Image (cartoon, rainbow, N blue to C red):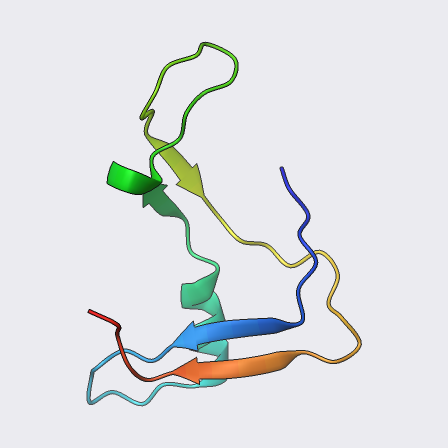
Length: 76
């Protein structure tokens, strides 16, 4: 578990015709994701490399001011 300090959150807008609200965007941001390929985890305990791991974001404490960025474009 890590507790990084942050002031901003980038919420990705999906390319769909459906209506998207801020609650659904935050829900998608907090979904569990699998770390594979270049982002795979190197285990410090058993010293295996490229172990499949999962990442999930949970907000424990929000800053006084939170900047929400709506990401409309993909860099690829």
